[in-house]
Amino acid sequence: MKKRTLCLLLAILMTLLPGCRVRTTLIETNEPEIQTADAQETVQQPEETPPQEEPEESPEAEIPDEEPVTDPDAPSVEAEDSDRRTFEEDSSGEMIPDAEIPVFEPVEPPAEVQVPEEGEGGEPVDVIADDAELDTTETVPADEADRLGTDEEGEVADSQQTYYLTLLDSRLGALFECKRLYVYWETPEEYRTVLNGSREHQIILGAGAYDVSSKLLEENLTVDAGWVTRKNPDVIVKVIDRAMLEQGASICRELADRPEWAGITAVRQGNVLLIAEDLLNTQAGQIGAMLYLAKLMYPDQMTDVDPDEALRALTEEASGTAASGNYVYGL
Image 1 (cartoon, rainbow, N blue to C red):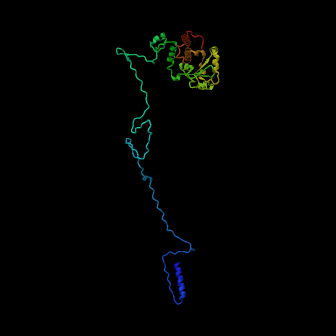
Image 2 (cartoon, rainbow, N blue to C red; image 1 turned 45 degrees about the vertical axis):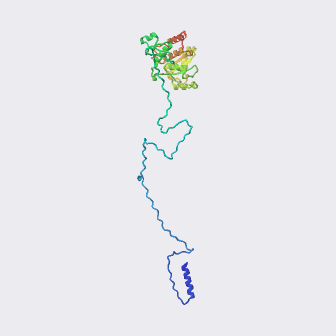
Protein backbone atom coordinates (compact mmCIF):
# COMPACT_ATOMS: atom_id res chain seq x y z
CA MET A 1 0.00 0.00 0.00
CA LYS A 2 2.83 2.43 0.84
CA LYS A 3 4.63 1.62 -2.39
CA ARG A 4 1.62 2.43 -4.55
CA THR A 5 1.02 5.73 -2.76
CA LEU A 6 4.62 6.76 -3.33
CA CYS A 7 4.32 6.09 -7.05
CA LEU A 8 1.14 8.11 -7.28
CA LEU A 9 2.77 11.11 -5.59
CA LEU A 10 5.69 11.03 -8.00
CA ALA A 11 3.36 10.92 -10.98
CA ILE A 12 1.54 14.00 -9.74
CA LEU A 13 4.80 15.82 -9.16
CA MET A 14 5.99 15.14 -12.71
CA THR A 15 2.84 16.62 -14.16
CA LEU A 16 3.36 19.80 -12.19
CA LEU A 17 6.97 20.11 -13.20
CA PRO A 18 7.09 19.35 -16.92
CA GLY A 19 10.73 20.31 -17.38
CA CYS A 20 12.02 18.19 -14.62
CA ARG A 21 12.85 14.51 -14.62
CA VAL A 22 12.52 12.53 -11.56
CA ARG A 23 14.34 9.26 -11.06
CA THR A 24 12.59 6.87 -8.92
CA THR A 25 14.16 3.86 -7.34
CA LEU A 26 12.17 1.15 -5.74
CA ILE A 27 13.71 -0.19 -2.62
CA GLU A 28 12.74 -3.63 -1.60
CA THR A 29 11.78 -4.01 1.94
CA ASN A 30 11.78 -7.05 4.12
CA GLU A 31 8.18 -6.52 5.05
CA PRO A 32 6.00 -9.34 3.88
CA GLU A 33 3.76 -8.64 0.98
CA ILE A 34 0.20 -8.22 2.08
CA GLN A 35 -2.27 -9.48 -0.42
CA THR A 36 -5.51 -7.70 -1.07
CA ALA A 37 -8.84 -9.06 -0.24
CA ASP A 38 -9.22 -10.32 -3.81
CA ALA A 39 -6.27 -12.59 -3.44
CA GLN A 40 -6.52 -15.85 -1.57
CA GLU A 41 -4.62 -16.03 1.66
CA THR A 42 -1.92 -18.63 1.56
CA VAL A 43 -0.26 -19.43 4.80
CA GLN A 44 2.40 -21.98 4.93
CA GLN A 45 2.50 -23.66 8.26
CA PRO A 46 5.81 -25.05 9.29
CA GLU A 47 5.92 -28.79 9.13
CA GLU A 48 5.48 -30.29 12.56
CA THR A 49 7.90 -32.93 13.56
CA PRO A 50 5.99 -36.06 14.69
CA PRO A 51 6.62 -36.86 18.34
CA GLN A 52 8.96 -39.68 18.84
CA GLU A 53 7.41 -42.67 20.58
CA GLU A 54 9.15 -43.79 23.67
CA PRO A 55 10.30 -47.40 23.42
CA GLU A 56 8.20 -49.78 25.47
CA GLU A 57 9.94 -51.57 28.21
CA SER A 58 10.07 -55.31 27.70
CA PRO A 59 8.19 -57.40 30.29
CA GLU A 60 11.39 -59.19 31.05
CA ALA A 61 12.83 -55.98 32.32
CA GLU A 62 10.10 -55.61 34.95
CA ILE A 63 11.11 -57.18 38.22
CA PRO A 64 8.11 -57.92 40.44
CA ASP A 65 8.31 -56.74 43.95
CA GLU A 66 8.96 -59.64 46.28
CA GLU A 67 6.47 -60.00 49.11
CA PRO A 68 8.11 -59.51 52.40
CA VAL A 69 8.41 -62.66 54.43
CA THR A 70 6.34 -62.40 57.57
CA ASP A 71 7.76 -63.85 60.71
CA PRO A 72 4.93 -65.80 62.43
CA ASP A 73 6.51 -65.16 65.80
CA ALA A 74 6.92 -61.41 65.26
CA PRO A 75 4.75 -59.18 67.46
CA SER A 76 1.76 -57.62 65.77
CA VAL A 77 1.86 -53.87 65.06
CA GLU A 78 -1.30 -51.83 65.15
CA ALA A 79 -1.65 -49.17 62.45
CA GLU A 80 -2.45 -45.67 63.66
CA ASP A 81 -5.35 -45.22 61.21
CA SER A 82 -6.88 -48.68 61.81
CA ASP A 83 -10.47 -49.03 62.99
CA ARG A 84 -10.88 -49.69 66.66
CA ARG A 85 -13.58 -51.83 68.18
CA THR A 86 -15.74 -50.39 70.88
CA PHE A 87 -17.77 -52.29 73.44
CA GLU A 88 -20.70 -51.41 75.60
CA GLU A 89 -19.73 -50.29 79.06
CA ASP A 90 -22.43 -52.43 80.67
CA SER A 91 -21.51 -55.62 78.77
CA SER A 92 -21.21 -58.75 80.91
CA GLY A 93 -18.14 -60.13 79.17
CA GLU A 94 -14.54 -59.05 79.41
CA MET A 95 -12.01 -59.35 76.60
CA ILE A 96 -8.31 -59.62 77.24
CA PRO A 97 -6.30 -58.65 74.13
CA ASP A 98 -3.31 -60.83 74.91
CA ALA A 99 -5.28 -63.88 76.13
CA GLU A 100 -3.99 -67.16 74.69
CA ILE A 101 -6.17 -69.68 76.54
CA PRO A 102 -9.01 -71.02 74.30
CA VAL A 103 -12.52 -71.19 75.69
CA PHE A 104 -14.24 -74.59 75.77
CA GLU A 105 -17.71 -75.71 76.75
CA PRO A 106 -17.95 -76.94 80.30
CA VAL A 107 -17.50 -80.66 80.65
CA GLU A 108 -19.28 -82.67 83.29
CA PRO A 109 -16.84 -83.93 85.90
CA PRO A 110 -16.22 -87.67 85.89
CA ALA A 111 -18.33 -89.75 88.16
CA GLU A 112 -16.84 -90.30 91.54
CA VAL A 113 -15.39 -93.73 92.08
CA GLN A 114 -16.93 -95.37 95.08
CA VAL A 115 -14.34 -96.76 97.39
CA PRO A 116 -15.37 -99.99 99.14
CA GLU A 117 -16.11 -99.49 102.78
CA GLU A 118 -13.79 -101.12 105.26
CA GLY A 119 -14.90 -103.54 107.93
CA GLU A 120 -13.82 -103.78 111.49
CA GLY A 121 -10.54 -105.47 110.62
CA GLY A 122 -9.72 -103.04 107.86
CA GLU A 123 -10.83 -105.47 105.14
CA PRO A 124 -13.06 -104.15 102.32
CA VAL A 125 -16.77 -104.94 102.56
CA ASP A 126 -19.02 -105.51 99.55
CA VAL A 127 -21.69 -102.80 99.30
CA ILE A 128 -24.81 -103.17 97.13
CA ALA A 129 -25.61 -100.02 95.17
CA ASP A 130 -29.13 -98.63 95.28
CA ASP A 131 -29.58 -99.04 91.50
CA ALA A 132 -28.01 -102.49 91.31
CA GLU A 133 -29.97 -105.29 89.64
CA LEU A 134 -30.98 -108.17 91.88
CA ASP A 135 -30.54 -110.87 89.21
CA THR A 136 -27.54 -113.14 89.48
CA THR A 137 -26.26 -116.17 87.67
CA GLU A 138 -24.49 -119.33 88.69
CA THR A 139 -22.20 -121.47 86.58
CA VAL A 140 -22.22 -125.24 86.71
CA PRO A 141 -20.24 -127.93 84.87
CA ALA A 142 -21.48 -128.79 81.39
CA ASP A 143 -22.27 -132.41 82.35
CA GLU A 144 -24.80 -131.17 84.93
CA ALA A 145 -26.49 -128.70 82.58
CA ASP A 146 -29.08 -131.13 81.22
CA ARG A 147 -30.05 -132.30 84.70
CA LEU A 148 -30.53 -128.78 86.01
CA GLY A 149 -32.32 -127.47 82.92
CA THR A 150 -29.60 -125.16 81.66
CA ASP A 151 -27.89 -124.60 78.34
CA GLU A 152 -24.44 -125.93 77.45
CA GLU A 153 -22.72 -122.73 78.56
CA GLY A 154 -23.64 -123.54 82.15
CA GLU A 155 -26.00 -120.66 82.98
CA VAL A 156 -28.70 -121.80 85.40
CA ALA A 157 -32.26 -121.37 84.08
CA ASP A 158 -34.66 -120.24 86.77
CA SER A 159 -37.65 -120.99 84.49
CA GLN A 160 -38.62 -122.68 81.23
CA GLN A 161 -38.87 -119.29 79.54
CA THR A 162 -35.31 -118.39 80.52
CA TYR A 163 -34.10 -121.80 79.38
CA TYR A 164 -35.58 -121.60 75.88
CA LEU A 165 -34.67 -117.95 75.38
CA THR A 166 -31.10 -118.79 76.35
CA LEU A 167 -31.16 -121.81 74.05
CA LEU A 168 -32.28 -119.68 71.08
CA ASP A 169 -29.60 -117.13 71.76
CA SER A 170 -26.85 -119.74 72.13
CA ARG A 171 -27.87 -121.63 68.97
CA LEU A 172 -28.65 -118.69 66.67
CA GLY A 173 -26.70 -115.78 68.14
CA ALA A 174 -23.49 -116.83 66.38
CA LEU A 175 -25.05 -117.07 62.90
CA PHE A 176 -23.24 -115.13 60.19
CA GLU A 177 -25.19 -112.23 58.73
CA CYS A 178 -25.27 -113.87 55.32
CA LYS A 179 -26.90 -116.96 56.86
CA ARG A 180 -29.80 -115.10 58.48
CA LEU A 181 -33.10 -115.34 56.61
CA TYR A 182 -35.67 -112.63 55.84
CA VAL A 183 -39.29 -113.02 56.96
CA TYR A 184 -42.48 -111.46 55.61
CA TRP A 185 -45.09 -111.53 58.41
CA GLU A 186 -48.73 -111.03 57.38
CA THR A 187 -51.53 -110.40 59.87
CA PRO A 188 -55.05 -111.88 59.42
CA GLU A 189 -55.74 -108.89 57.15
CA GLU A 190 -54.51 -109.56 53.62
CA TYR A 191 -51.24 -107.74 52.71
CA ARG A 192 -51.11 -106.11 56.15
CA THR A 193 -47.67 -106.53 57.73
CA VAL A 194 -46.24 -105.59 61.16
CA LEU A 195 -44.48 -102.58 62.67
CA ASN A 196 -40.94 -102.42 63.94
CA GLY A 197 -40.99 -102.99 67.72
CA SER A 198 -44.21 -104.99 67.74
CA ARG A 199 -44.51 -108.42 69.36
CA GLU A 200 -44.42 -110.06 65.93
CA HIS A 201 -41.25 -108.16 65.08
CA GLN A 202 -39.64 -109.38 68.32
CA ILE A 203 -40.59 -112.98 67.51
CA ILE A 204 -38.80 -112.68 64.15
CA LEU A 205 -35.67 -111.31 65.80
CA GLY A 206 -35.79 -113.92 68.56
CA ALA A 207 -35.87 -116.66 65.92
CA GLY A 208 -32.62 -115.33 64.42
CA ALA A 209 -34.12 -113.70 61.29
CA TYR A 210 -34.70 -110.25 59.79
CA ASP A 211 -38.05 -108.51 59.30
CA VAL A 212 -38.50 -107.21 55.73
CA SER A 213 -40.98 -104.57 56.97
CA SER A 214 -38.75 -103.16 59.73
CA LYS A 215 -38.35 -99.79 57.95
CA LEU A 216 -42.04 -99.20 57.21
CA LEU A 217 -43.97 -96.49 59.03
CA GLU A 218 -47.26 -97.29 60.72
CA GLU A 219 -49.30 -95.65 57.95
CA ASN A 220 -47.52 -97.74 55.30
CA LEU A 221 -48.03 -101.23 56.76
CA THR A 222 -50.56 -102.19 54.06
CA VAL A 223 -48.44 -103.35 51.12
CA ASP A 224 -49.11 -105.06 47.80
CA ALA A 225 -47.93 -108.08 45.82
CA GLY A 226 -45.27 -106.04 44.02
CA TRP A 227 -43.73 -104.87 47.32
CA VAL A 228 -43.52 -108.43 48.67
CA THR A 229 -42.03 -109.65 45.39
CA ARG A 230 -39.34 -106.98 45.47
CA LYS A 231 -38.46 -107.91 49.06
CA ASN A 232 -38.27 -111.61 48.04
CA PRO A 233 -38.51 -113.03 51.60
CA ASP A 234 -37.05 -116.41 52.49
CA VAL A 235 -40.00 -117.25 54.78
CA ILE A 236 -43.67 -116.21 54.80
CA VAL A 237 -45.61 -116.25 58.08
CA LYS A 238 -49.40 -115.89 57.95
CA VAL A 239 -51.46 -115.41 61.12
CA ILE A 240 -54.92 -116.99 61.02
CA ASP A 241 -57.67 -118.08 63.36
CA ARG A 242 -56.85 -121.36 65.07
CA ALA A 243 -60.04 -122.99 63.81
CA MET A 244 -58.81 -122.48 60.22
CA LEU A 245 -55.68 -124.58 60.77
CA GLU A 246 -57.68 -127.62 59.64
CA GLN A 247 -57.68 -125.99 56.20
CA GLY A 248 -53.97 -125.23 56.42
CA ALA A 249 -53.06 -126.99 53.18
CA SER A 250 -55.56 -125.06 51.08
CA ILE A 251 -54.58 -121.74 52.73
CA CYS A 252 -50.92 -122.35 51.93
CA ARG A 253 -51.81 -123.09 48.31
CA GLU A 254 -53.82 -119.86 48.11
CA LEU A 255 -50.80 -117.93 49.35
CA ALA A 256 -48.54 -119.60 46.81
CA ASP A 257 -51.01 -118.87 43.99
CA ARG A 258 -51.14 -115.14 44.65
CA PRO A 259 -50.25 -113.00 41.61
CA GLU A 260 -46.51 -112.41 41.22
CA TRP A 261 -45.68 -114.72 44.16
CA ALA A 262 -44.58 -117.71 42.13
CA GLY A 263 -40.97 -116.52 41.96
CA ILE A 264 -40.59 -115.64 45.66
CA THR A 265 -37.92 -117.71 47.40
CA ALA A 266 -40.26 -118.65 50.27
CA VAL A 267 -42.89 -120.03 47.86
CA ARG A 268 -40.36 -121.91 45.70
CA GLN A 269 -38.75 -123.56 48.75
CA GLY A 270 -42.03 -124.19 50.59
CA ASN A 271 -41.12 -122.03 53.61
CA VAL A 272 -44.66 -120.96 54.52
CA LEU A 273 -45.81 -121.11 58.15
CA LEU A 274 -49.35 -120.59 59.47
CA ILE A 275 -49.59 -119.54 63.13
CA ALA A 276 -52.73 -119.44 65.28
CA GLU A 277 -53.52 -115.89 66.39
CA ASP A 278 -54.23 -116.81 70.03
CA LEU A 279 -50.69 -118.23 70.35
CA LEU A 280 -49.40 -114.64 70.34
CA ASN A 281 -51.48 -113.43 73.27
CA THR A 282 -49.13 -114.75 76.01
CA GLN A 283 -45.40 -114.59 76.57
CA ALA A 284 -45.19 -118.37 76.73
CA GLY A 285 -46.98 -118.64 73.38
CA GLN A 286 -44.67 -116.01 71.81
CA ILE A 287 -41.58 -117.98 72.86
CA GLY A 288 -43.23 -121.08 71.42
CA ALA A 289 -43.75 -119.19 68.12
CA MET A 290 -40.03 -118.32 68.10
CA LEU A 291 -39.17 -122.01 68.44
CA TYR A 292 -41.53 -123.07 65.63
CA LEU A 293 -40.13 -120.39 63.31
CA ALA A 294 -36.50 -121.17 64.20
CA LYS A 295 -37.09 -124.88 63.64
CA LEU A 296 -38.44 -124.14 60.16
CA MET A 297 -35.62 -121.77 59.17
CA TYR A 298 -32.57 -123.38 60.82
CA PRO A 299 -33.23 -127.13 61.18
CA ASP A 300 -29.51 -127.93 61.53
CA GLN A 301 -29.17 -125.74 64.63
CA MET A 302 -32.45 -126.95 66.16
CA THR A 303 -32.25 -130.70 65.49
CA ASP A 304 -32.71 -131.72 69.14
CA VAL A 305 -35.49 -129.20 69.89
CA ASP A 306 -39.15 -130.23 69.75
CA PRO A 307 -41.30 -127.06 69.57
CA ASP A 308 -44.50 -128.96 70.52
CA GLU A 309 -42.92 -130.27 73.72
CA ALA A 310 -41.42 -126.86 74.47
CA LEU A 311 -44.81 -125.18 74.08
CA ARG A 312 -46.43 -127.63 76.51
CA ALA A 313 -43.69 -126.99 79.09
CA LEU A 314 -43.91 -123.22 78.67
CA THR A 315 -47.70 -123.03 78.97
CA GLU A 316 -47.82 -125.43 81.93
CA GLU A 317 -45.30 -123.32 83.79
CA ALA A 318 -47.14 -120.08 82.98
CA SER A 319 -50.75 -121.13 83.60
CA GLY A 320 -50.59 -124.58 85.19
CA THR A 321 -52.20 -126.20 82.15
CA ALA A 322 -50.18 -127.54 79.25
CA ALA A 323 -51.23 -126.51 75.76
CA SER A 324 -52.71 -129.22 73.60
CA GLY A 325 -53.63 -129.46 69.95
CA ASN A 326 -52.12 -127.75 66.95
CA TYR A 327 -51.15 -124.07 66.86
CA VAL A 328 -49.13 -124.00 63.66
CA TYR A 329 -49.18 -125.48 60.17
CA GLY A 330 -46.27 -125.50 57.72
CA LEU A 331 -45.60 -126.82 54.26
